[in-house]
Image 1 (cartoon, one colour):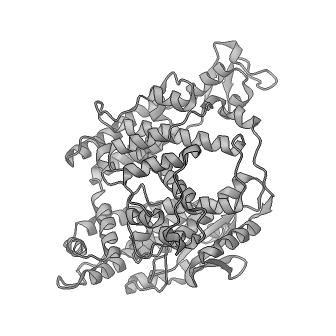
Image 2 (cartoon, one colour):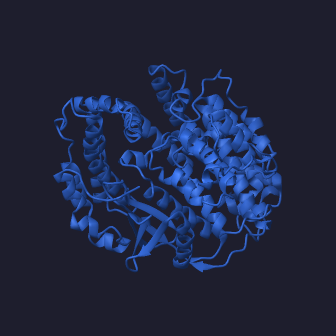
Image 3 (cartoon, helix red, strand yellow):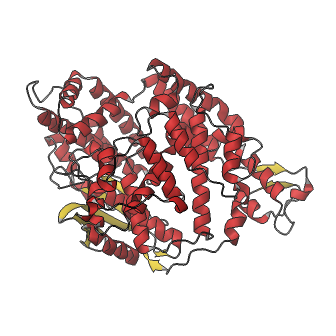
Length: 580
């Protein structure tokens, strides 16, 4: 995403160039605890204001309005991103309060800006442009401006969501077995009539399937009573908003903005991806314990990172060291950004600053484990690096283009494709009966089932697109969940993503279809340029036409993802354009 020069206003430039903030980009937790940067950052946060007057006249062209808007927004979002970065670390009570104060202030400032005559004037001016980059910016800023609730509804919604999440994340489980046959052996469990411990431990140790099912169902039901009230509040708020906006329910309203723009399309996709895996949730642990893992050569994170960098070279992506803690990323000799390396218990990426072509280069902290001893760890590192590269390499001119997709259900397709491509180059393909393959099939079917639950939850009761959840569960897991009505209370994403819960499995399915259709093409750099860089700001339809040389519609793409899903019926691969 970038060629980089800092251009914001004087106040924003001062913040961007602050020596302290730049200097601590790659600090470790101990250093953070010693000298907290939060007070200075919050002071700058609370001093931030959008310009009171429009800096461009009504006769100015759309390009000048877009540039002025970018100068106003990029400083705002840079502060917001830095606050999100520091929230990932242990903070003192005083620092947490300061961060919260900053977040509330930024939210209020953005809301006021969206209501200003200055913004409305810019908004209409952008709509007049035929430049694809400005059109993409206008679409994203309009979506951001219109998808905001009233302050009262927002407070009620966030309170209910927090209460729901707290109920779901409770790990406590204490059971009194009326059937003594479900007790674990005394050697494995010191309590004879009660069980109070890890669900996973019990499910692995218990040989009786009916006992495992009883305990699993009890665990899933643990938050249903507590969370029903919160969930009803959330659904009522969403329904009221949908009716106010002229929609029959929340599912219809939120999907109207997506690539799969109607519940019928989402339902069709989910059903097309449903597969009987003959592994039920309460037996998964035992199945995994009996499956053999995919064998890989243990390696250090640094060496694995070097291997990833070598594989990226044919895509014209280079990762070069500055020193032991800093790496610099380029695409075709264009600076994309810096990676600050640190050590941790798990591999993860922490965004410090997003890259924007012509405005600023990106900054990420890449947290590495010392050693990667198994397939999952090496795969996780590939996923992390791919997510960083896909953001840094995006060739767009505006912050919102680089951080918001054309739709919410299409903005990560490039990342998932790059993850699959790198794994195809670096990792062995897991055998069908391997531990990794079993777990992947189960995880996919669980996501699909939960997506059906989420779609149902926000559809009106008489809608014909509703699923029979009892049948849906049996179709996937070849077993019956006696209290399937508890399903909505088992995962917190249902109150945050709602009907959009399908988006991850959908985007992975599209990315998989693209990967399978193009992996034999000689010039993989073209695919990377069209899908990840996308310098021309093509929409998803155009990108897919360029990659697959055919006209694509949501309905036809659903069918194609099903072909990719069923290996015995794969769609033909096409490299017509990619031979160039």
